[in-house]
Amino acid sequence: MEMPFSIQPYSGDFEDLLDLLQMSMGLESLDGVRHMLAVERARGTRYHVATRSSRPIGLVGLWFDPTGAVTALDPPQVMDLAVLPAHRRQGVGRALIEVAIRETQAA
Image 1 (spheres, rainbow, N blue to C red):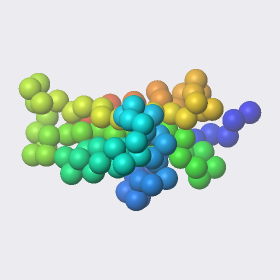
Image 2: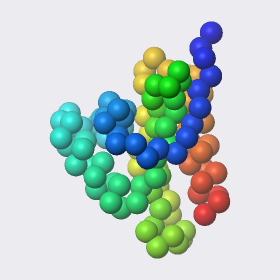
Image 3: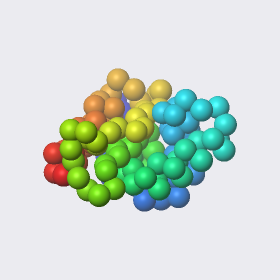
């Protein structure tokens, strides 16, 4: 039986998430992933990470307009979503999307 997972906001250095970000972004080059991550972070993308036994197994990146406005013309957007293959079909992706929905509703 799989151990439960937890989801928390992420504020680390992101190096331990590069494999997940690479899956989400579809880029071959880790330098490209680092560049896109820098762009997303500069735009204000917020990340939440699912962990199991203290290891990252999934992530979601959610972008909001930098002014904090939530409008029909510029709604919040899921920028990244990935779950490691060994942890798929266990509710991790669904839980990450639910976090994104709750954060959007709170805005």
